[in-house]
Length: 184
Image (cartoon, rainbow, N blue to C red; front, side, top):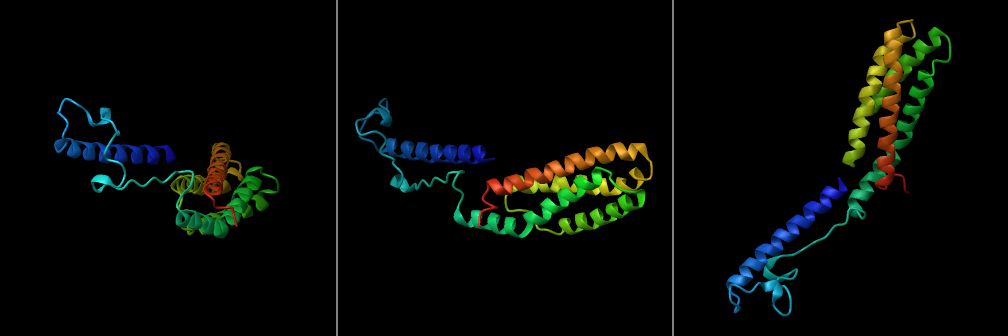
């Protein structure tokens, strides 16, 4: 995503400068066979000339408002999402009686429903991972009672859903952390 933003900014900047060079060459005292770039003094269309302003935003340094939004979101929601992931992992291990596991399924279902009310993180990569993880955990909750009642097909799905769901949530928390969401 960050590479795409940089490439898009570079292409836009190149197009602006090319348009500026073209407009300058129409009024240039040089012959049309001479390019502006080969003239002494280089390109006359530097940022600010020809009405073009070039602004560079490096993906490694997101605007402070974006970083602050990710930090605020992370402070408000990362702990709950990590706890949800841990709860799913513990339940997926299948330790306990059938009644305890079914009760755990119900508790996890409530936790997943609560997590679905959380607004998506401002970081689009994290938002995608979180949505995928919660979708997998919803399936986990649906298959949970049957899996712990002896349905082997549901049990097989449960393992996959738990693994994929918790993995996606972990990737979401890592993306928020990387975008500045865990810093005070």
